Figure 1: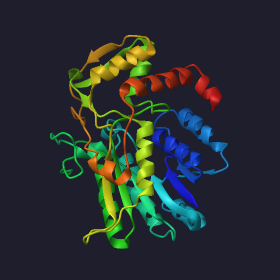
Figure 2: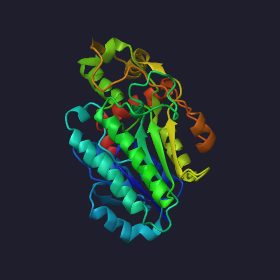
Figure 3: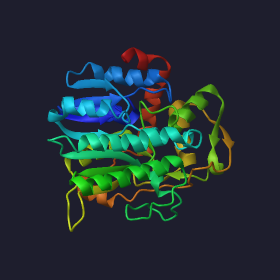
Length: 333
């Protein structure tokens, strides 16, 4: 039996694949290794996985309407679960290249769902959504019962579209699907376009970090190990049909403790042993001033229990970052 993980060379996909392999699962990793950010980081993650006999890798794009079904036909008899994490990431880049998001996120979701519904042993289809779907919502914490029809970025709109597509497939084919709305994930092997990495690069170079909304930002920063525990909890607890509803669920995965952006930066400064130069700027288009996750449902249904405060998670990120920056990460790979 095997689990397909898309985006296996990505930040969350890499950690998820490691966790699955550690518990004895066989994993088929899919990733197209695109150049949205430095491919060497993706290759270094992939090198960490490639020595495990339980891991097989396919360099594919999830929106490929020929290659993905072919993989399903070839491997499908062994696949019991799919964790679909591949996507075009980044709120800001979606303002520059919206078509990339429609291709990778919306078409990729449909192609993966089409493959999934034909797999004879599939128990669950878990996929990445985002806290961005809450858009202009001002009620905190964000609840899965809240309206999510007012996205403020193209990225958010594509993630909401993915949820709607999953609902349709669950309804039409009685296929269990679980969407996970991630809240500001950070940690070792993180993406270079994420806040922790961007801030660390600037701090070490002595260049200004851009602090939007003049620093009046709060985020539900969530350490990657906690996110991975939630993903595995979702995989192990497929949605069930009930009261005329299809086997479709959506959950928040967040730390459930919001932090001031200034505290996040100060914790990173201490971890790196250097002070940041800060450039305060207005709110950026597509961004929101605060996020906060209501995780009551994910606690109850998935056993989700985030444990890592930024006082622990940021130093762990910083240790990895300094090692990777100085070449230790490359040598380990």
